[in-house]
Length: 80
Image 1 (cartoon, rainbow, N blue to C red):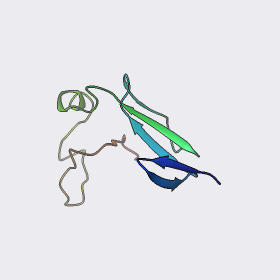
Image 2 (image 1 turned 90 degrees about the vertical axis):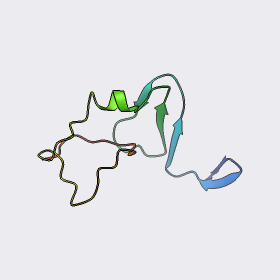
Image 3 (image 1 turned 180 degrees about the vertical axis):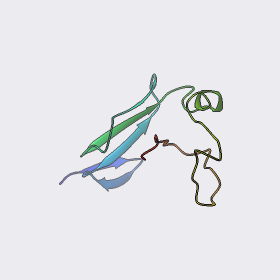
Image 4 (image 1 turned 120 degrees about the vertical axis):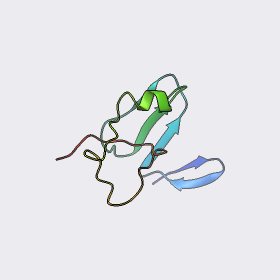
């Protein structure tokens, strides 16, 4: 089992999530075994862009008495 060196830190090479800045905003779908890539280019997840896709109402959000995490990286569709 090899190691990867990131910023001078040796980490196990089993399952890695690599977030980097490239052209576009994309990620592989689902959990990937091994290396999983996420690209967060210019303009990704800005407030203006997020509001086009996220509905924020008290009827659709079940936050279990916790405030909505506007800084969250991941947003998921309704699973019901």
